[in-house]
Image 1 (cartoon, rainbow, N blue to C red):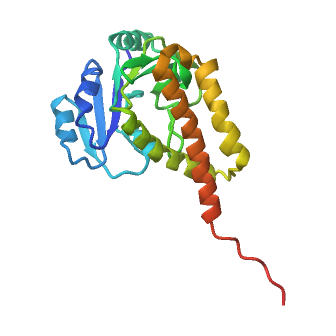
Image 2 (tube, rainbow, N blue to C red):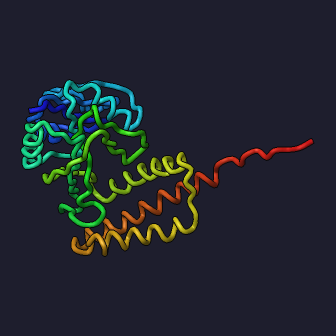
Amino acid sequence: MAGLTVTVITLNEAANIEDCLASVAWADEIVVVDSGSTDGTPDLARAKGARVIVRGWPGYSAQKNFAAGEGTHDWILSVDADERITPELAAEIQATLVRDPAEAGFRIPRVTWHLGKWIRTTDWYPDYQLRLYNRTRGTWPQRRVHESVSATNGPVGQLRGELQHFAYRDVSHHFQTMDRYTTLAAEDMQAQGRQAGLFDLTVHPWAAFMRNYFLRRGFMDGTAGFIISVMNAYYVFLKFAKLRAAQSSAPDRPRSSTL
């Protein structure tokens, strides 16, 4: 069986880290890279058998690449502190690594707990995440938010076991997270030269709601599905609104002059 290193990046995750690490206790090695927690997260992680490295915050992608580089095994399972590996997924990962897979990595379906239930509709499900990968053939490209592994030199497989995600404590926490992430998303779009106009502010959010609530069957989850569909549409509106505001506040380029 190929060895497996689990990596987790943290900042003040005392409420989550113990359950997260308990779900991956079967792995050969656990590396936690902490960016300066003040709530005891590093000590809790060490007590669960993790090797903890304290390092300043360079951004999501850079921190995850660093964590992978600190592992002693080429196969990496990247898990966020608010995620859990189910027993079924753990068994599937172990069975996969026994055969020394030729794949560069594997996508894993992620299911989110919110508003008192597991959400298996809207854009939130199955929300495939490429989290199990061979670090010699995969890396985290630079992005400010919604980072994902780019796998090369081999096919990408797909697992069936679910990765559980406890993303939000409540609706207020959901709003706070959206505010932070939409700022980063707008910065990414601006860096890519993307422009936001009236079409982006009006049509894209409406289309996002229609996709989430009807095409992705949000209506099947009742009130929770409606709330999430509205929130997902608002996320789209907010990131374009922030991009538009950044465009408006950008200084004009100096005009050339002739004598």
